[in-house]
Figure (cartoon, rainbow, N blue to C red):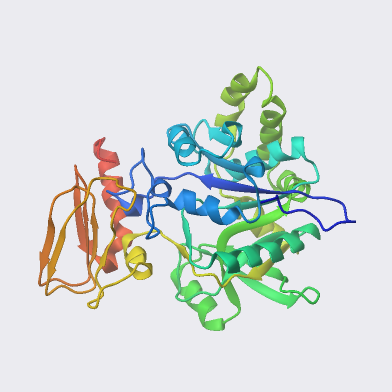
Length: 379
């Protein structure tokens, strides 16, 4: 599969796919751990991890040579094992977490030094997409908007007032295609505001899928975040030389910790530089076990058993009696059983068990915070 490029007769802009693979997925504890985060797990109903599934669907748009994964030092070896077709040099290792803008910006800076006319897309490693063909079509439309100089997003029609997502308010369509200008980009609003956004019918969720020309993105990064821009460009210029590590050690810890949404996209939208296309491809940010229970196949009583199709943890048996709408994640190899319960989450791993009501799934993060305060090894 060839990398996406301009039609014949136009200035070529090769499409590079970038996959930020960071975070520890604290709301999916104890399945997801700091040393083995959720993007390395098979949660798709197949043997493919979330990361592998992301790479597979991007294969229609970008070949291995034009695909990059940005990940942490602790996960680089596992990423390489899961993606043997990806060149080792295309696994970009962050010395420490600095939020998404540093990760995405590092990839953009490196790509720009090698291909200044490049188009780039950023796609999280831990999202679930049900309709790959519709996904590829939406990204293709976003690439067309990026060629015109817009910082493009893919908008998802909201189904409920979620405070963990960004929201896009769209204006009139630009031209005859599906691209609309984003008039307002609001990241993670309070609940009451999220309710008003959903009720208005004028907003999309920001799915954290971005496409742009690297020169346009880096120019906007320089305008809004000059310190971050200058540091990343200095790292990129040293990347292929013998002083890469010394420059990384000096510069990386000084970079501002900020997401690309706050650092660039909100301000770019205010300046009229952001566009969006709708994405109707069964997108889910698998952020907690309740959501996982909603998207996985259920039995006749609404129960979901998230098997380890990748063979992790051994085969576990699950026995449920008079139980409804319960999510079971068996990873210990032992029997997990439940009687007369409903709307629960039961996660069983070799060294930890977690049980909570489904409507408290977001609060699993509080357990991890408590373990961190104790200095516990279970995280």
